[in-house]
Amino acid sequence: MAAHDWRATLGHLSATATFLIGVPLSVLIARPFKAWPSAPFLPTIMGVEVILIVAASLELASDAVHGVAIFVIFVSLALGLQNGAFRRIGGISVHTTYLTGMITSLISTEAEKCASGEAPPPMRAPDSKMRLLCGIWAAFVLGAGTGAIMVPNFKALGMLGAALLLIVLILRNLKITQMTEMS
Image (cartoon, rainbow, N blue to C red; front, side):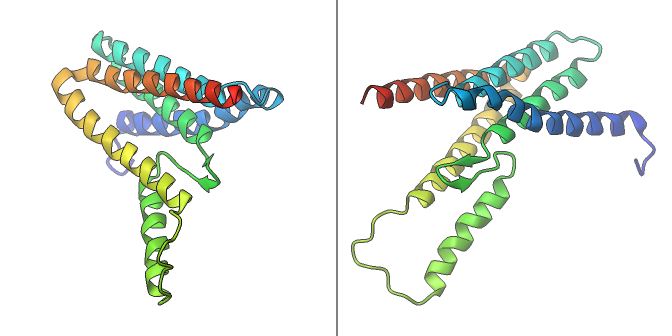
């Protein structure tokens, strides 16, 4: 806005607005799933993300006139849906597009434990929340690294790697859900 580049400003605002639309949209999608607790909410959201990522990638690869803008809108909507759907996992607050806040929480929790001066018990049970945060953090780093390798080498089609990873996670989640229902 300061540079009076209105086209660029509109691009940034559309990405932000689309992301923000994705958050309440995930809440609306979640409503029917509350009536059926066994229904696979997270795999459904992840499936929508796959569709949006594939559509964004194909749009960008098509060299359409507004391909970049449509790509940004689809990916922003996918991120908004993801952030809205993954608000709470395992009893902790998770914001998938706010990695620095999670890392800060992880580090400050451990620092507080060390600064308290209390000696840890010799055989302490692993903290499940800490393991979960470490797993989420590792997944983010792996995803960012994979994207950093795929997209420059394969351009728009490199985004399909993210869609493939989401499909693997959907299948894994569905398998785990089926196994827990059987037991």
